[in-house]
Length: 108
Image 1: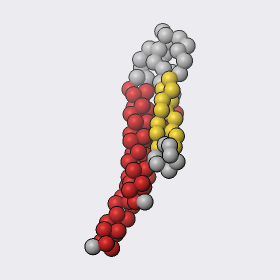
Image 2: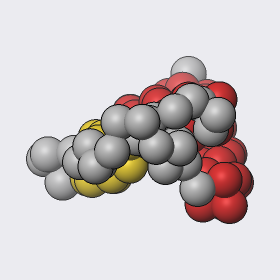
Image 3: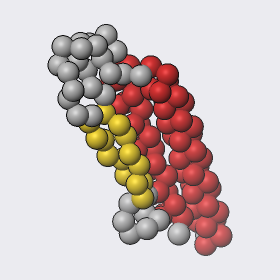
């Protein structure tokens, strides 16, 4: 069980890191004419309980020569959420590591 929890924590870390990178990309391109940021979507991996996946959906191109469609307030808020998600996943990994250590100590 601890191995499955460890795997879930790692996929959570990876998903949060990719989503944070997506937000950083959007913020970095806030001054780029016509930039259309992607939206991150999280889903549970299959089979259930095996982790988290993230996918990105780009917005439809509406105008090529217009200003960037990046919403700085939204991206800043998303970045804070992804940071907390990353921290939580790291705590899951730490707990799984402690569980595995206890299990090994018990068996030894």
